[in-house]
Amino acid sequence: MLESFMFHHIGIAVKSIDDTAAIYVAGGYTCSEAIFDPIQNVNICWLTKEGMPTVELLAPQDEHSPVNRILEKNGVIPYHTCYIVDNVEDAVKELRKMKYVMVSKPEEAVAINNCRVCFLFNKNIGLIELVEAPANI
Image (cartoon, rainbow, N blue to C red; front, top):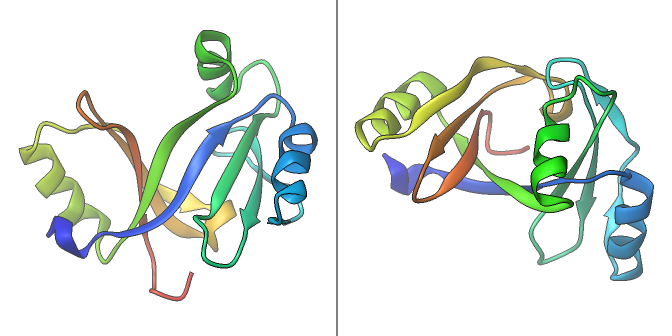
């Protein structure tokens, strides 16, 4: 099961998308337009560069955004990795056997073509995001 997970992106909590994206752009990344994700209450932009990992920047929309807790505790930091899976429910069942705890139930994600995503935590890995999606995202 886990061998079928495909790496998708690294998520970074940021205070300012513009400030952080500028550094990646200077390094050759291309930056998408920022979009608002009402489920996570964050603004998101994607950074891509040929042959390099995709980076997702997540900035709080307001004081109620869950990203604020991460920023207050750690500052700007990579805080999750994301994997594409064929079936979120099957993947969650397998990960729970490995002592992963579900942080958020599967919901459609505005930032990833309305595919279903969920977050899980394991003390030996940290926070991971699963996205149930076709291979072409």
